[in-house]
Length: 415
Image (cartoon, rainbow, N blue to C red):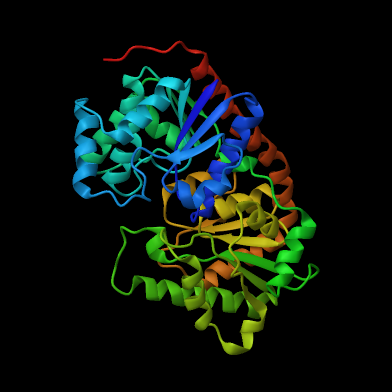
């Protein structure tokens, strides 16, 4: 069996790397004899992460090339019209001809915030795969209800080319059903629920190397990101400054009211966004006398190491989806702070929607009060997680069943 995996986002985005690593490991465990070819946007820089793949190659439209815009546009027109091929198209076509299924890596919406990602990294490869008679599987994705009519039309066109679609939350399933697309639609769960964590000894050693005191006292984790990274569509003048100040006040109040050590995680590095740079801005606004209780983790850690360290904490404040997932899957209660539907849907799916707050107009005192309430109910929430987490992990494994059904199908002929 030959499996082709595409739409693997840059490894500098640790949440997306967690998805890709979990998905790749699950595929290898389920299909040990399969040849797995992984296509990513930055194969030279990111290939060392994907040791479970038999080969790591460039996507149809990689980002590590210096190709001119004209050549990329010409390739796009050739794919859309089906007239002619260039070298990259021929390479991708050969991979499709040799494969049994094309699997799109799981995660957020196929298009994100722009048409470019949707067209280049979803529509084009799915078009070429169908022309080669290769079954297409979208695996554990989010589906957004786009307001822009053109975005909606293209998104629907992409999904109509799939033989199998699984989504990672009930909200996405509702949107998908409205689109009335073909394919085996199923509700599963994010691949990252299957990510293993670094061992306790390694995790504690990493925390100690960053100056975090050994466990015993209250240790609260938080990941920091710019408000512009939370929602690039909300680029208001002064918006990031206000949010920076609010997060500094949150951390200061946490230290003052609880005496906790606050451990600050940075998930993304350039070019996507620079969480550590933002964390340093927040840190600079914290009162000098409180800074000895605030620990900015500066190391470039793997997703497993990040999950292991989060798992050694008492509570967590999540402003990104995947560190929140790491915490919950490690039985660490989470308060999420985010404006995007995917995080709201995630907390609904875990049965913990009451522990979610909007990032816009954030009230630091209200957030800290909510977190203290979370601390007081920690034991009850852990009991909920003991039941819910195994269920979600089982649902994540179900993604493999849908992929297996695709590989069992004979190749079809498409017009």
